[in-house]
Image (cartoon, rainbow, N blue to C red; front, side, top):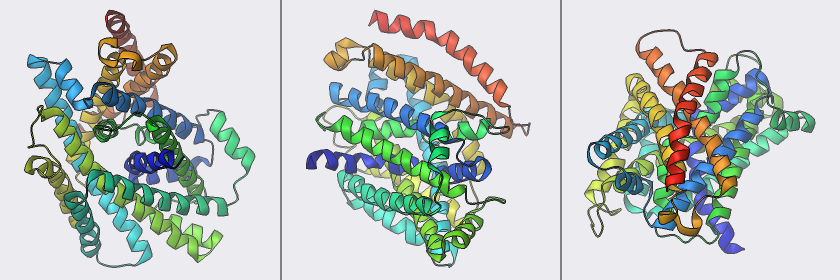
Length: 428
């Protein structure tokens, strides 16, 4: 039993990756705007995250190669080069662009606890992150993140419980899907902050050298607990009636629950930002290692210059933008488009590769797993379409695309891609 819970602690790194300031903001906005009506979106996104992450880690354990290496081996020549450039560009640029938001979120939480100069807080967050990434083993970082996720979860759950939400409302919101007017894009945002491509490479990279015993238990429980924390954030957000901001939400909680809730929300937000500020550089480095490492090479070890240069680049870009207080808007737009393109590519690749019995052996997918993974492919196409279209609209200074257009385009793409997908798995 102890080894099982040690696995939960280790795999909480995935929860740390998806519960960042973006998730806190999106879930809190959902609670402030629609109460508990959109909890079902978090339930579904947690399910999708479990299915995709389990497939990615199972691939690594079954074949000995992580997701990046599997992609490199599957695609050769010009196609291989194109996939490598797309994946590396999307993951590294995405991690670097979002890193500024992670650090600014941690700073915003710290400011609620103790106001001070932004630059000082950026340094106070960036230095420990650099030291941990540079000198601590990856397993040690993962376990530390597990403890921080537990702290963050306790803060948000206690704060949510203090609001005494009606159990019937929570149950209805979790089990009965509904789309109140104007909520469609927010629902996509809630799912998109949980199901992100770099987390798949993070999980697959961390699974290298690990055994399958208790892995599935640890991964599933850790992600489900992360989903529960997201629900708690949504419930906390329902305490705000006016315009959303971190300060307004913290103040509303203090009025309703007492001064401890103000500090509690600040602590939870700071923990969310700091944990994501560690996982984004780590995911970028693991992705690059999977794409470029050759058998027997030492130049992509955790202590190598190659490996450190990747996480160092992501961390420094994030620190630079955070210190200036300016979000890297052009980089975020490009990252949204690239990540929107790569998520369905990776999901479809996973669908095909985990059905390849010559590689997976008895760990290949069965009918039930294929059904669940196919649903996730459909969702990834929906999220990818949303990311690409919205990024294009922002880049061209056009109105954001509506939910109906996104749904139609994603549906057409799913129909077009489904036939070759099923043919590929029958051939394998």
